[in-house]
Image 1: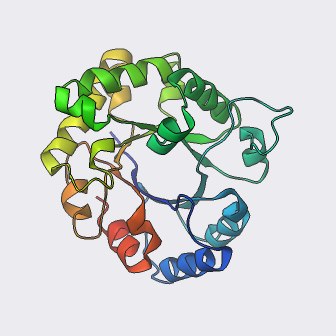
Image 2: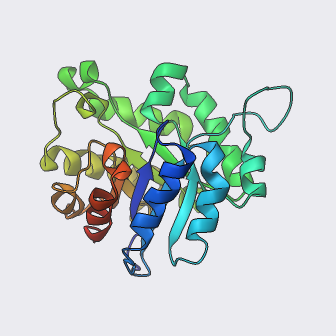
Length: 255
């Protein structure tokens, strides 16, 4: 069976000016990291930087652009929102869906995220679907049930041939910016659980093809250890993706 895609995805969030973003991309791309066929680097950048990023990575093998979000309606009178169709029209191949910050600050529900996923797939955009539990759930020990509901309510309406087109990112929300860190064992344990849940729904062969990224404070000094876990297929990287030297090391840590 072919190796699952191993992905280093940078999430810039709401950071950097246009000029700083351009310099960061230049610094990373001039490192000339040759990616294997199964490896990808994705830059999830703010909307105003999508075209610039796309043109920066256009000549690079296996380097791609992602939007950080899209709206859950096809089109219409939604001033300030951006549709999946718009993203597709400028050649954006990936979109982050349901990031913990979108769920938390913008109250995005599992049902809304299902709509976003559908619109992305209709527009040939690969969703990077985020799931994960807050501290209160982790402390109760009910994290498996919690993420299982996120998968069920947002993903399981999809047929097997579509679910294969999705990337999943697991975010232990309790370990992001809290000073608490998830151990490598905790990361592997949850990734293995997610894969087993997908296998129960779609079969082992399909589950084995889905890339599951880790999104809990991936850094230059812990990426190799995290990515060496059998079910961790790379990372969705926040803060460390804003520092060229750090993100370069994270890319190099891919399996």
